Length: 104
Image (cartoon, rainbow, N blue to C red):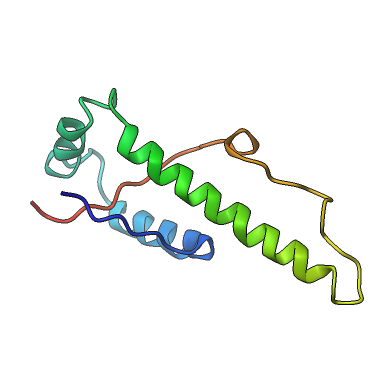
């Protein structure tokens, strides 16, 4: 049904730039773009699939941070371990989201 694909957290800026460019010159939303999403999620009331993707992204961020913290212990310079620990979803605030979907 859906193909899950994660992108590195470092891709945020290029993806936002692409989204901004795609919206340039448009005053109204494109119904053909948002209607399938609204139908699939019951107008946003059933966001379980997307919540799971968000959880995966946060776990990935935590894993990367943990690896960097561990590596910093062995560099001989100042360590980042335990200075700003990230423990889960409560450490993040979702400001916005973009759903990228194929043509149906």
